[in-house]
Length: 444
View 1 (cartoon, rainbow, N blue to C red):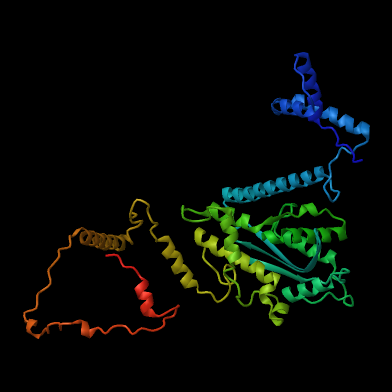
View 2: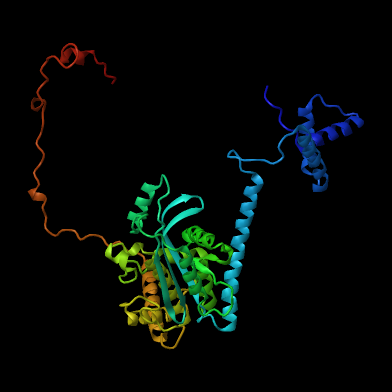
């Protein structure tokens, strides 16, 4: 026989409800009627009373030896899943607050233009498990709005082994990211040395002992966190000191804090991510490492990507803050700086559209152009309106002056001789055509 379902808190509430109704002289035939009658009042029971019945159900489960904790189909406690979801939600809220505090504090102190930010990216061979990535390359740089990109750190990592069953995944990762296959014959990369270089890089010019946050794209947050977890496991250090944040969140708060006009910046954070994903500086030569240049996979280099991301942030923020662009620092080498300045001035002098009509001129330099545009546009609108209001008058066609009546021939007179009778014969159906015609009856 199947096991009986454990009694819940509502069951014990129904028993108490049944007892109270019996004292009032109301009786029920079965538990189904009791459940239907007790349902509305159970929904209105206060939490203090509900907890009493939940405790009764819990004691009954303990007495019968039933598990109190609920599990998923894979054996994971539901309480653990809820705890993880709450921790992730709190981590996202803390990340957003931390980024806002960094930008706001620097802006209030007047040091936002010289504030240093760190960007990191990794290439991994494959994803071995939900939280383990086989890293093959890492790159980091720091930049500021005033100084642009200052320095870049790049490292090719040899993990030294291929996990069992992941040889094909590693091979596909090498083809996609332009990496070499992990070689057990070559010496494995020293993770302690890599961590020391990254930590020194983060602490350079930092008077405090707090490690500065690292920014990256949303899809690289988990691989980078696992990368630092692997580094710290070799040195027995705490990986929680490394804060891995989203670059699009920084971009959104950074440009909105320095904007001076309402039509600048991003109205939503998602637009900052779209701007970064557009990759405006893609296929620009000279941004990747030497190895990826030789293999013609420069666009897949991690150093190439962090420079493109940083140039996108700098190009947008420098235009808003009015910072002079330096080739190689704020934009790649070889870009038309004069064209960028001309476009910037054009955007600043552009008159925003008005919902009610034409907007007023924003400066004296553009007053003549805007007035002429307004006059010409208004006159064209008035002409169109005038044409629409005019009534169309029908003008009769001119009759021909030449008389062609004498050239028209009269119609010939036709008699029955001109229409010979039909010859009798077999048609497509039965009988002859004449017999079929005789059978037809025509009403006068």
